[in-house]
Length: 86
Image (cartoon, rainbow, N blue to C red; front, side, top):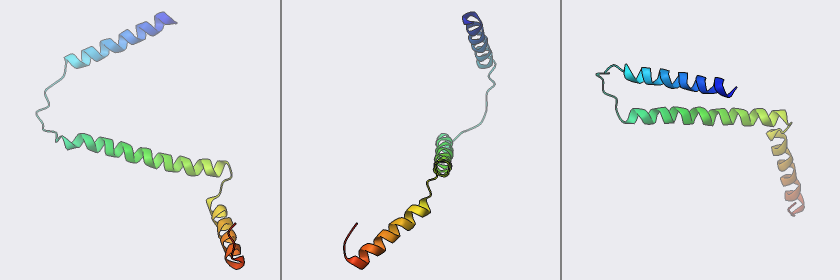
């Protein structure tokens, strides 16, 4: 198992060295701000994924945000009638 892993790693290293050795010149200009665009896209994708996962997890565990909001509103209405806070 260890021998197989070492051979796989050495094969990947050999491919990486080969690819680095045959790099062709680009003859193009890349604006320094272009790299930040990659980070912006990645951050947006991460934020979107976290939002979707949060809503899926809430649905999975049966937490419904509208039910909680309705309960809070009901408590507020009762406290407004009696003049006391719950």
